[in-house]
Length: 216
Image (cartoon, rainbow, N blue to C red; front, side, top):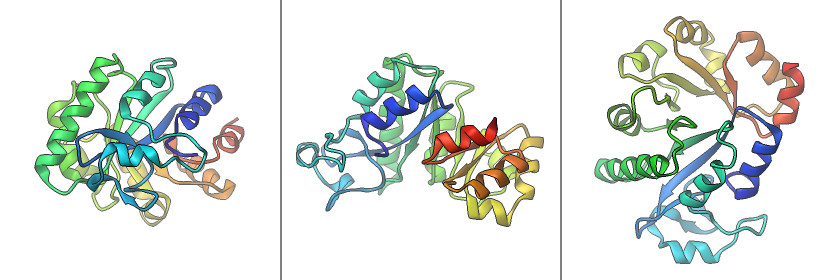
């Protein structure tokens, strides 16, 4: 299951480039890893951690704290952790979340093993301003050209498969600018082959075994 401790372990065992996770802040200030803005019927950002922790994930595991996820990431730092910082309701809250995540990553000595992605440009801007020099920051929303992303200090674009199909010229443009290109979420062979033929750098998929086979 996505964003679970077992998902990270499976990614480490497979030896993929990286494993993506979503990070939200609970109403009482805990950073949790969970796919999307909800956990069951709860809105994560407006619910306290203990309430969320009582409801297990679909695979029976508990909702992991970012600290627990980072501790697992330490075991195989060569497998990158791609942290998606979810959009929050105010700029001030997003600033706080970015600061807390950067501090936690530094505490676990994973600054060279973590890359960041976000849909909200304010989050990306904060990362560019506050993260160590050389930190990889990619924009997710799909509405900025590579040149504009480059002007903001972002190191890559990370766009939906449909967006990239409509704008295939962005792949060459980004690479010419020295930026990385990731495409999400591609779960069929035809889509993976298209991405490979276009020369993208990374493919986000729930089927890493298939992607690895095609890449061979």
